[in-house]
Length: 321
Image (cartoon, rainbow, N blue to C red; front, side, top):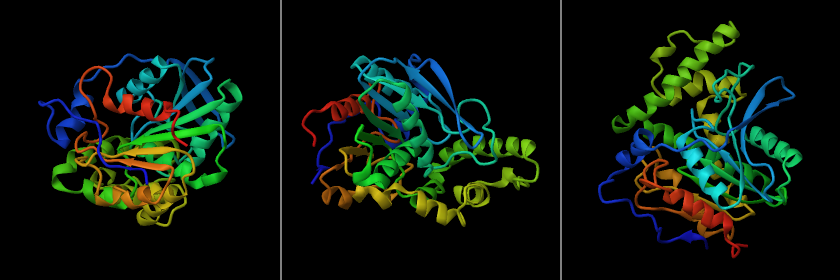
């Protein structure tokens, strides 16, 4: 029954509230870039993925997936990578399609449920890296992707993939979309949509007639954006169909390797359905931890963040089955 009853995370006294804990790392944290060797993975569909590596000789490899409109160079990714490199892992931080600083080559791009791209990254890593085990780490959208990937494969998952950990995960996408429409959260919504709108306008210039970008600046919700762009570009009926089929909560019960989800109780982006306590109580492999604080991808202030130490602790434990 791996529902973790009491989290060890305690924020400093001056770092109070979910909003401040969310924005503080974005505004003030600086981390040196440690995944500096870039490789372009050419895909069979004509597109590409940019992979950023650190090391090429360790027997353990950590694969890190970033969040919505993030990249491999995001502070939270580099902080996590640094913590694992320090403990003897090599790290592969990958960029989802269109997130590496260069527009991808197809009208479609990335989305919360596109686990086939994570699979391509893992399979490539197995070919080119000497590690005998792979651990998966994900943040937010990348955390949903990570847990969905593990859950979809269940007991048939590649034995080389050992464990997984994910932070601040929107495991029920429809719920998060509604939560972000609340007045107090509109800043986050607009931050995400600003770059997404820009990307579809750029794509329309490359693929004229493929995307309906008329009055795109008027789109102010994920229901509007996903309904007009994400769903039709990726084969979903509508936004609700996309959210339903891409949410990792559907497959958490199938997880067959030790996996940890950490969602803060005061995360302003996550809705009530993003706290899968029952799935954890019913599982021997899926662990769920709910710190009272942490916001969205926060969990620290200065030095190594608690989330980084917690991930190392979980993935490095010899006692988990």
